[in-house]
Image (cartoon, rainbow, N blue to C red; front, side):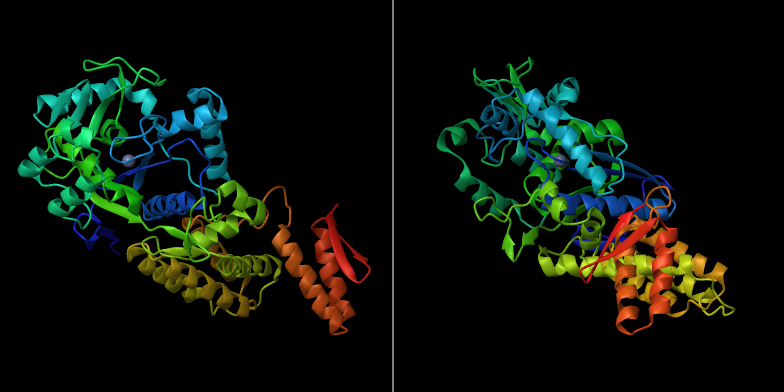
Amino acid sequence: MALKLYNTLTRKKEEFEPLEEGKVNIYSCGQTIYLDMHIGNAKTYAAWDILNRYLTWKGYDVFHVMNITDVGHLTDDSDQGEDKVEKEARERGIEPRELVTEQVQRWYEEMDRLNMKTHNVNPRATGHMVEMIEAVKDIKENGYAYEENGTVYFDVMKFHEDHGYPGVGSMNIQELQAGAGGRVKEEEQEEKKSPLDFALWINADPEHIMKWPSPWSEGYPGWHLECSVMSSKYLGKRFDIHTGGVDHIFPHHPNERAQCMAMNNLVEEPVNYWLHSEHMTVEGEKMSKSKGNFYTVREILEKYDAEVVRMFFASSHYRKQVDFNEEALESAESNLEKLYNTLWNVENSEGGEREKLKGEVEKFEKRFEEAMDDDLDTPKAVNELVKFSKKVNKNLDNRKEVLEEAAEKIQELGRVLGLKLNLEEEGGKIPEKAVELLIEIREEFREEGDYERADEVRDVLKEGGIVLEDEGGQTVWKRK
Ligand SMILES: [Zn+2]
């Protein structure tokens, strides 16, 4: 079956064909590492984690690069304002490098807790200063950049005449010019040939901390430059998939594309598929610090299990705006519990003689693949998982091997969506969710007066190292 992806460049779903058979190169715009990752960032990274996992599952050899921005991302898109890293470091009273070291470590911890697959490379901008300066030289030599007072600008109109710009996103050049013109300050207007021009290299103010010598000035690179330079370095001049958030559709990605073509003298498209993930709202509103609905991953993981959060991410389509709210999280939790419940039941069932599920496993896999092939329709894929797990649950009298095959398929496909589905997380431990479910089941038996079966549940838990204690009408449990 063929995977189709929605390509922002052409604004349609296209059949995915890699540049090199069997191999997929992906570049994802990553974190500007000055604050903790927020839940919206995590939603986007989870989408690309699923993309990576799904392509790998389909048999491709995936090479995935996600950058870490540690310099040059200004507080304003039009080359104005402070460097975000420097600003935050100054506010905390620490060195910018100290801030980056701390934040990178936190980022890795959070990505790990969310079960995001390790990328092949997480290049950092400051580690590629030589390459970035070389790229600016190349772009200038190829006629697409000019220098004003130690700052080097990309000549957008010149590039547009030769190659077309932006090419990514739905806006046309006139709208862009009008829009950009309204934002740009007067002194900058004078320096730039066109308000659309953006800085490749910025002449640093004397008080600026992070700066490097260059042929033009002691300065620092523009934010857009790093992605072009690092993607070319690790994935080649042309590669398969470039991902980001919808906020990258303009200006970051058209700028990246233009730089790539200008520095590498390309006439072909540098990237074949541009994928963009939609924003997340929180309780119906746009996330913002001032509204107090801005949540970091750390804050969310204090309240919710990481796997529930991953189930929540998988339950919406990456190109749809999704709302983060209590109900949605509860629904994700309930779906996840259903999967665990089935896995638990299969493991603890002796099975029977029937074989009804035998042909169903293959059909389930096919439906899952069909959903994912349709531009990664993860909500549909989740639905297939839940439906199939219900079916397995109703057929626990099938032969044990058949049941096990079904359970393994649930695990295999669930993991494509970034779930863990490990019944025994470590050393034979019954997961908390399963313990709580069993306690509920035991409670139901007791309410029905079926004490024999209630005791059976208690014994099963005991075998798994869980001791129950009934205290004042409530059951508490602990691990032996
Ligand atoms: Zn980027």
